Amino acid sequence: MAKKLNVGLIGCGFMGRVHSNAYLKLNKFFDVGYEMVMKCVCDNNEKKVKKFAENWGWENTETDWRKMVARDDIDLVDICTPNNTHHDIVMATAQAGKIIALEKPLAMNVEEGKVMTEAVEKAGKPNMVWFNYRRVPAAALAKQIIDEGRIGKVFHYRAKYLQDYTISPDVPQGGDALWRLDARVAGSGVTGDLLAHSIDMATWFIGPISSVCAMTETFIKERKMQGSDKVMPVTIDDACAFLARFENGALGTFESTRYA
Figure 1 (cartoon, rainbow, N blue to C red):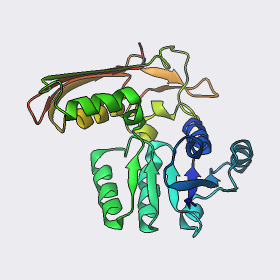
Figure 2 (spheres, rainbow, N blue to C red):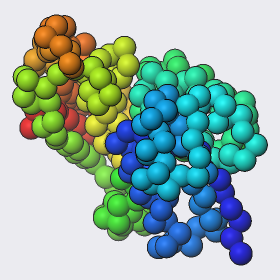
Figure 3 (cartoon, rainbow, N blue to C red):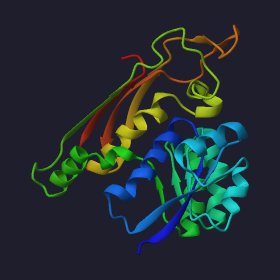
Figure 4 (cartoon, one colour):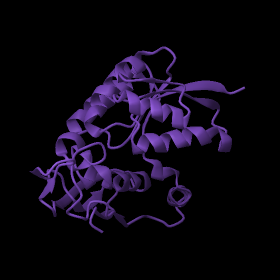
């Protein structure tokens, strides 16, 4: 009989729904050596989290993530919250000795990420950032082909990640969904939201990047705040393009936008 692994999920927005769906189906399709138990879901909105638990089959709820992290019956903490909360939750979870699964991007900035990484490594528990594109069969096959040397040395790498979900000037900023347009919450724009996936794939395929030359642009400089007529500056990048050099000498070109 597989050992049970009790999961505590923090955040019940879009990614919380995605992860809940995965936990429901995982053991039906794959033998992972564990029975994933949807033990607890946490959100600071009590009405919302109770409805979420009912819809997705979580056993119980919390409204304080600190209480959930401290619970003895939680083995793995899955963090699906806005970027500016990642540091505090990861640090507390590492201190509690739990397994950590964290939505990307890792942190608000490099310095914060280094502190988090050191704490998690010191804790010595399994941990990961959810770079899910590595699990796409085509990507896994490409990785295998590269590692086996079947295409020889890689000289060039090109990556594009194009979206259009903020292309309309009428899309507001703020609120539950569009905190990604606020640098105080998101930390960055497409660089952390979309390009993080492209960069992860590149370093997985090719290896570390040694230098970059980049430019970013914010196309719509002001937007209304969600639920009001107040107009505020947009503080993140809408698009980013950069050239990169890998440590092995390969060259890379990267492009990402929310205005495709």
